[in-house]
Image (cartoon, rainbow over all chains, first blue to last red; front, side):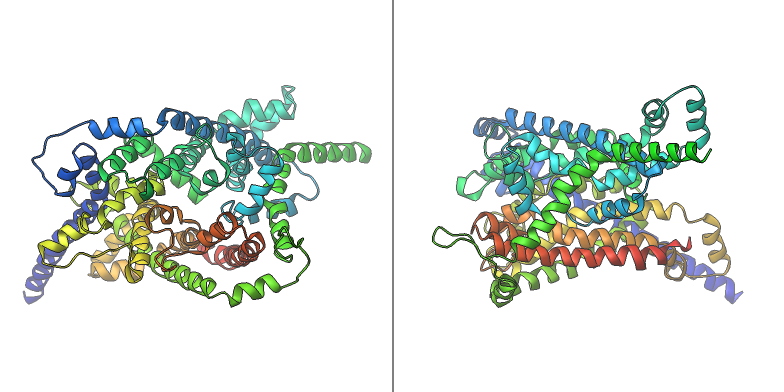
Length: 281
Length: 297
């Protein structure tokens, strides 16, 4: 009897614990989303209403008008769009070929080269900014979008990802295509690439969101509004020296994150799956 | 026959290298050569108009070690790593446990946790500026409700680095969460049932069963967090610019400053070499020790 009573007591205790946990979980979620919600709210209100937390204040679009007029945003958007596209095309090309070589072709020196590629996972392009800047200048690519994108095209991470994807494709399909008279490139193009489509999608989402958000390297190699991506444009626009007020900065910030953020909210599951697939393998 | 095999082998070798050549050329140009060039230029003196650069051996390194800012920056970065890594891993784990449990509005919580991950660091910094600005910022408003004085979070040495650390944790915890979430979903239900039958407390179940099973994920996240503690510095450009008095300056920002604001490339090269050395140690740990230990699943 007493055992039963104690069991009930602890069950009640655990129910209380569950309630506390649910509350803590939601509180954390609320805290986590607050900066974004607040910026959203502030972007639609005048600065004085925003900083005074005047909840009843009227909504306005004037911050967006001011922000939009303050910098060549359309050009920045276009630059970022071209940048992520160029990087993605380059990465697909380079990592497909290299991933296939590592997965299915036997050649001397393969293991050594593979270790070199793996080492690049840790030699971050961000750390080599000084020499990469010199290299890009030497190649005549300073202040070009190609110059911003090129150091990321032979992504070790992408090569590794493609190698794993290609390795999981059954050898029977490879042999069947060969019997049908396909050459190496035919097999790669007709068998491997279509079957690895989910990996390409995952890689594309990770790559696009990485390069949409990248800042330090583009800051170094761009020097004009014609090449500058959104992040760099945003940092210049919001610099304290420019004395732009905080509601306008919020509006500009929201504008520049909107495409990616909206895409994320719609395709949330795919984004999370993509990051997982890219991370775990 | 042997000749045929040889020819096939040779053909494969040619194909292999052909397929690899774009990657090999790009990796040599933007990873291997720059690494060697960094090492090389860290051994030469700065090129000025009066004096051409000359071989100085380890002098740049000696100068670096004699530079008090270097030690401040190293200390800051150790602090940055020492706080952001464990705290964001702990928060990520809590987030994953909640997002995987039966709390109400679970979908909202998951989205809220993960959203900062898709924002650029620069945008994150702009959002947090709103909280930190003295007098106008939200933190000050909340503080004044309780009668606390206005605090210049970004402008005083005691709090600037902490303000930076908080933004980093906010940004990366949700990213780490998804790896824990995926791992939690692979833990079989019957383990929980067995623990319930044995009358194990939920905390015991977590500590003795869930946490050990999550170990490979934790180690994977740990490596990522280590790399992030070197890499995530974009918000410094908006929030503090490393100030005040270098109180929030981190190594990569200092490299950028030396190279592109002070134009002291050899010093920057020496510091870059030290960072590469640390990353090399992390890589070695990952490939030898961690990869071996985490294959028990």
